[in-house]
Amino acid sequence: MNNSHNLPKLGPIIIGTSNIEKAKVFYTAVFGISIERDESPHYVSARGVDGTHIELEADSEYRFADWKQHNVGTYKNSEFQVDDIRSFLELVEKHGGRVVTNATIRPWGGFGAEIADPDGNMFLISQNNY
Image (cartoon, rainbow, N blue to C red; front, side, top):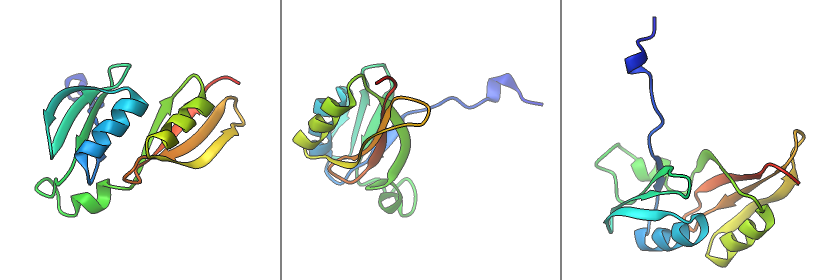
């Protein structure tokens, strides 16, 4: 029996980085984050345009063994939705990221693409309509 007071809630999306300053520039320009707390060079707490809590973290070996290996330059299994995927992909490249998989039509509609930030962290980007 589940105790409704003990059900999990989604916490921040944690993005590992080897260079917090470079990550701040990229995520501010491309994802439009608003920085709430800046403890550079190791930690930044921010909000996405929809209020999503995003944390940029570097040098966090104190948290878990092999933290950097598991969290910097990895696939994040997070999907960000945009209105115009093609212009978003251009913005990614303009600010030092790369397009891993170009926008392709999804069988259920819309488009999907994969991008990587300057550290190689990968995300799925989607556009729901054509």
